Image (cartoon, rainbow, N blue to C red; front, side, top):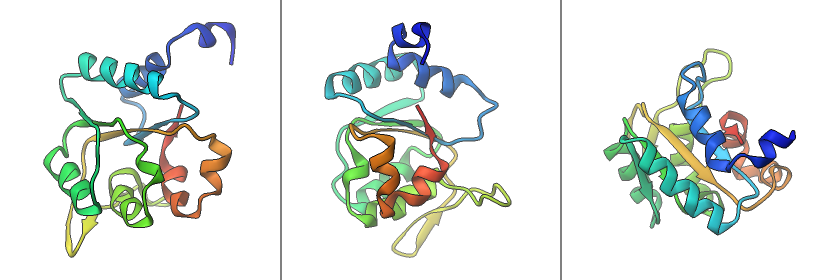
Length: 149
């Protein structure tokens, strides 16, 4: 990271990536982040993008499915460490994040026999390093397809 990048707030890089329509990514992951930095970034993104909504808590895989379904055209900023949740949450999240690496066709968000196409974007945070996240088997597809910042 050069000096200019080091002096920029972390929210600048997420915002810049969201604005870049060239990016086919539907999900952005900020790693090695503190709770305070996460709060600042969430607030900044919600203020900057009128289509952005902040989610502070996800209670169950079904709840995650409903959040994605109800906001499928929005930028959903998860102000919680969703990646620490059980594998069942990741299966639902993969539908909003992942695409077939050979055809670039987006996966569908699915839960309990229901599914839909997600057309929004997702912003995720984790205090863990990329190295630790990449080792987590349950995150394989999410780490493969997220734009990491």
